[in-house]
Amino acid sequence: MKKTYITLSFALAGLTLSAQNKNTQAADKLYNRYEYIDAAEEYLKLVSANKADNYVYRQLAESYYNVFNTAEAAKWYAKATEEKQDAEVYYRYAQMLKAGGKYAEANQQMEKFSAMVPNDQRAIAFKKEPNYIPRLTAQNKMFDTKNIDINSDKSDFGAVLSSDNTLYFASARNTARKSYGWNDEPFLDLYKATRNDDGTYSKPTEVEGVNTKFHDGPASISADGNTMYFTSESFKSGEFEKDKSKKLKFGKVGIFKATRVDGKWGNIQALPFNSKEYNVGNPSLSKDGKTLYFSSDMPGTVGGSDIWKVAVNESNTYGTPENLGTTINTEGRENFPFITDDNKLFFSSEGRQGFGGLDVFVVDLNKGTEVKNVGKPINSEKDDFAFSFNTDKKIGYYTSNRSGQDDIYVANPICGVQLNTTTKNAKTGELLAGASVAILDDKNNVIETRATEANGMVTYGVECEKAYTLQVSKDGFVSKTVPVAKSQGGEFPMEIALDPIDVIVTETEVILNDIFFEYNKSNITKQGAFELDKLVQVMKNSPAMVIMVKSHTDSRGTDKFNMNLSDRRAKSTVQYVISKGIAKDRISGQGYGESQLKEQCDPCSEEQHAKNRRSEFMIVKK
Image (cartoon, rainbow, N blue to C red; front, side, top):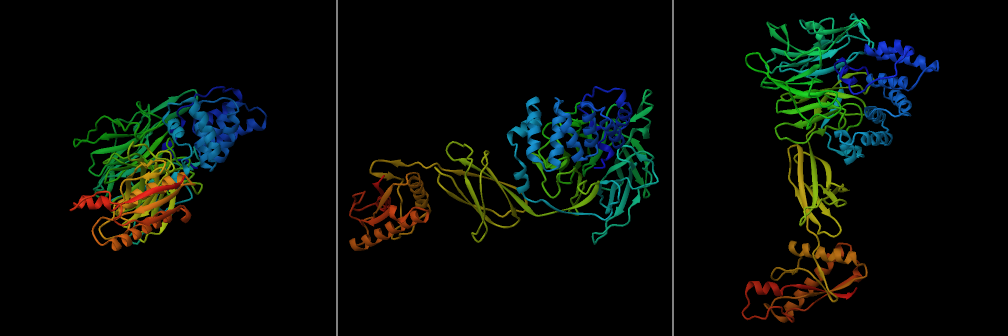
């Protein structure tokens, strides 16, 4: 990947380098100047000359990691980890393996990482669910995506669409500019293009009034289109440090504000919390203009970089930056926040469970929901980041290096529902693993059947505004059929409580709650089916058991009528049990009419008549 400059200084935290020597001086100097491609070439010369040691292998791995050359990074991490390394090295090695689709090997490195730092949030998540990829792959597709024709042969990223249909983005396409040693591309500038009604875009042009000879971009535009917050290097405001021994100037990334007057951007001001001690970048302004979200490695950061926010006051002053905490941030890198008009926060992270590299995540700040990986096709095994979404126009943009360089992609939302079902024991509340959850369409066709995970969950992606049905079953529990209401999209949680089979089995009889029938009818009622499912489970658990069903009526009607009615009830009971998979030779039935009344009464109340309309289950063979 031709890594975007905003992440460059965030990528280096967490490792203490040692074992530098005179052989590595030239390569180390390039590495310290963030010129990773040239640095790698110098380290490779040491390998060819048989002058490489473990330090060189690690530096090679880190150089390729920082430009997201996953294959080369993994190759040299493998060499470096022949000796014991810091925990972060194993984590980065795992990230590079995941980016190459080598999930089993990545898990091996995550095991080592987790053993070294068991309290790390990333280690805890891995231990809880090491094989999470099938779950991410199966989740409901949230967006369709396609490449956009404004991309160049250089890095293009961080696109946001303003209210006036202007698309702002950062690009390294200006070849007249000096090349940057990080990725051998020109320095970044802010560009803009107009999005036309037919979905095409005008030819991109530079944004006048904000670009300098340093890196500039990406940007965030206010709702009225007249205020811009954008990222630039601190050289712009004279904030940098000098390293006389290396003859270098070290700048940091900061956020700057520009205002538009008469169609021109100007009046550029540095935000007061910029610093030469840390990075502040990738701003995103809320719809009301009162909160600015950004990424930073300032003091108080949990990992390499975190998502922060700050209040924007009416008097053109700012509050104290506030870290969004461990609900959002991890010990890894979180970057590129974007806040939508309806207060959904999109951001990228390498510290959460993803497909590899940076993945895009979302959290609804209004509802306080859990952070969610947005899944494929937005996320891939490569770096995916800088997601933005225009709520009014219902169109999103994001950046990915899946093609080999940073390109901008369009994200079109799909109306879908993520159905999250949790199956529990109705009596104890215990989560039930291994329960069968079948989903049926509105014509009762089975679409798919899955087993619940250890957390009792099964997730299905379904269409908006369509009704579905779930059929849930588990050995030892009464099966349940649950309707799923139509939904307009998003996540739809459902909790399904299965009643444990509560049956008394004596030497002579299986005792269920009474199987009541309606007056003068022989069809199985919903309550009757509920009880008969318990008998089915008992018979499945005792394969040799043979049952004789005795069916009875109340005392109303003639003897002949009642005998025929009870016989029909016995047969319908037998047929129901057979329909559930019990062999025909294991169950039979007979009607006894009113010859064996349970309640001797004259006259009888409705309750007494109901008790007489019953079935009994006699054990013929155990």
